[in-house]
Image (cartoon, rainbow, N blue to C red; front, top):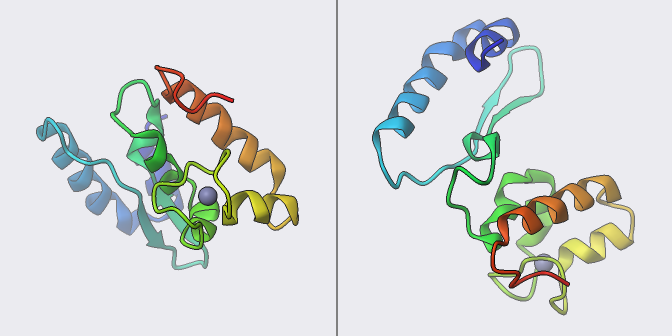
Length: 126
Ligand SMILES: [Zn+2]
């Protein structure tokens, strides 16, 4: 099942909108991938994240990865460093929220896993 089939099942009116976005992405060579958030009529949000298809296929800098985790990124705004990778930096709001149980540890672990996958030169490996 394709992404548009799923989107149609969830919110029929969104199909055209997301289709236009995907086409735009395919045309540009260095198009920045970004997350789109669509409010659903039944309540809740649909988050379309083109970059999440596979980090090997899209150029995402390790310090940008948190943007694809909206629940983590909410906290990232309060990190001391704007390019915080939320691994070893001091005064990191994300690791503090994980420690306090505000972010589920499983979410943080999948973030770390993707960071490691994306980190070809081992720059951020602990
Ligand atoms: Zn941080």
